[in-house]
Image (cartoon, rainbow, N blue to C red):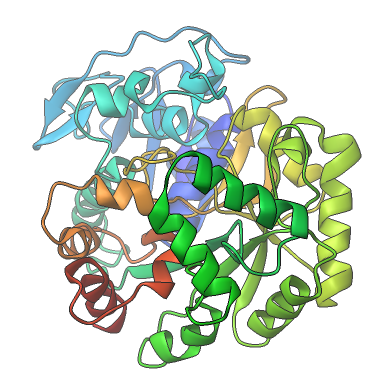
Length: 430
């Protein structure tokens, strides 16, 4: 066991130390506030406090893990070992910054709890994040810090294994907001769609609609019968998230009473793991709607649903995650930016969320999302999936995952002679 001495054991400190050592590095860890216990410990140990006790392995602490509530922090980005760092504490120390406070700041989305200007849709703007402003949004910076810390620690203590086996993983998510573009809608919707295309003189959509309704052409969103074939040579089976909610003034949805939609969900559930896309209305009014959407989906699939995504992204990270936890969701796949790529929480490693407003860890595991489909298309590359492969290969720890999100419409248009879709096939079948 690795023992850590600190002048005060707090919930914040326990949370971030256990995540880094036990979750990321698989090292058992213990804590003590007693100097005599620390001195008597014969195994690997280090102190995390204001000043060293003697000549032990020492990490100088920032105040963040000993505070309560949300306080404006002075963030000054420096460079060390070609990595951006902040919360610099000891320029001449083995680790010149507080890796634990810095990691806590990013994982808890501390900056999103501070006053900030939201986008028109009520979201935190990635342009305002310290990661984007300082050019490390594309890097799982916490994972790089932890890898470097592990290297230094293993050289100081023979008991700590000096080798890490690298086997990060890829994960594919598929969102199904609307299963069909033209087919299986109500007569009024079909008629409205027809006259809308006619009014806009959108002849292409008009012809497509007629051909699909006459069953001469396949519906452009209906890709479901191809999924088994697409992933048969891949060890990476996707998780599929369905939006299963009634339409509201906030969002138009596909009818949950439609027989064909329910059939598709059941059939996909026979081969792939399912999750639920939370509607905007359920996100805003969780007490009335969120439990109902989860119950309806479980009644249809006859399975407990533990995985969830917000269909329109995170609005208030602390409140949103508290609501998911209260409704007994175990795994969230929303921690990313809509229409942009990068590691929103500074890590590629799944982590339990810490609620800084109530100062405790939620039983909700957050799975970071690197990019959704629009975000992938923003990657500066002719074939963005080749670039994704490079991001994947750069992950420094085996606990890391590169997770991307596509939709059912994208999978329908897969063709071997299409560079973008061909790149996807190579990406999942390597």
